[in-house]
Image (spheres, rainbow, N blue to C red):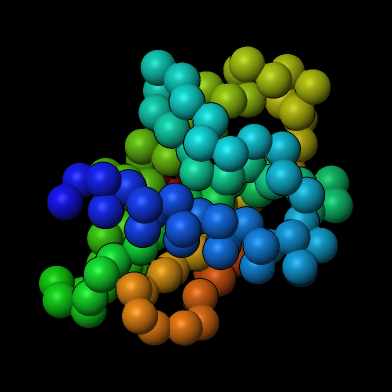
Length: 122
């Protein structure tokens, strides 16, 4: 069960990456881990640094993928982004954005939420 969940998550991230690259974003890091947490995708959109959280759910129960993005998860992503910026000082002054890509198993297409949340809100 856990292996299947990880495979679905990796497939959702790969699909999200393809969607974002088709839109012109450039990949800087994938599954960037630090003591602050993990970032699914770190991308560049022109001069903007984009931290992308991919939320995938197997069904719409409990609100689906969007409902899984609660305040705790947003704070966790923000903390991980701050850690990434500390480790990559060349990007420290960049404008940053937090995007979310929602994937529902068996349901196409992906849904991309640009600027889904802001660090100032948490």
